[in-house]
Length: 252
Figure 1 (cartoon, one colour):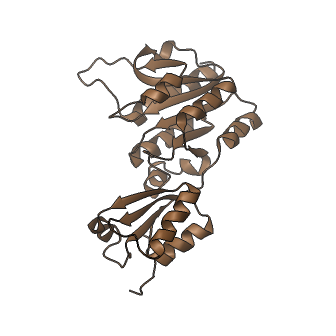
Figure 2 (cartoon, rainbow, N blue to C red; figure 1 turned 135 degrees about the vertical axis):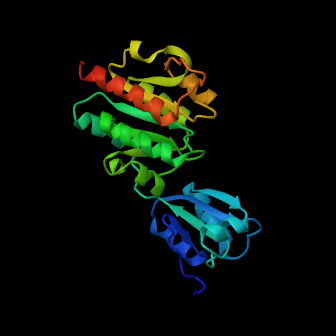
Figure 3 (cartoon, one colour; figure 1 turned 45 degrees about the horizontal axis):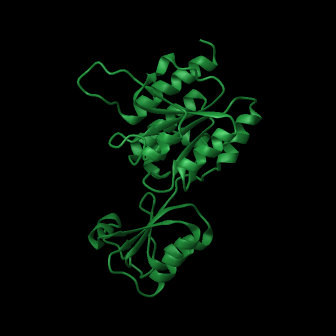
């Protein structure tokens, strides 16, 4: 294979020149993977550009890059690209305003499983959610697994990626949007009034909603558990609560 040929394995682009050109193009980039110990030549330039643009750089074992690139000549660097472009929080709010509806937003805090994020997007689109907000770090991005799992819903859903969820929540609250945290030990979801502007925060299965984010929320809503397992899959829990919001908005 030629030295700088790029390989596009779903959402993966490899090779120093290919990654540099990708960064120059302005295309959405999920993250850059650099083999441990690689810090020479154009690798330093790639890292510098990533710092300027706020792109996450991860140091990984060279064997992992070999496996991901199917042993092609990755030259110690690979880039995960987005399957869909991102929106902004303001664009989400403007979309709701354009429909003459109170904002209905889902905030995903630490959803690292791409299948779960895709499933949440699919349910959100069906429920009339205006947009989804995810953090730049410790979260799945809009990769091709997310696109596939959403079964086409990603094409119709606005997704914003922000640097700080806590401060974003503060800004939403200033716009009269009530923020609900889906977590344990809260009021029953179906007894909660979701009228008005609404943002639902969903955390990961393992850690749940982070402490800083939970402290910013107005109230906590819970799904009662009667079995021996005390939690639901994040996408399932999100779907149940989203449909309750939709039910109330439709007056059912």
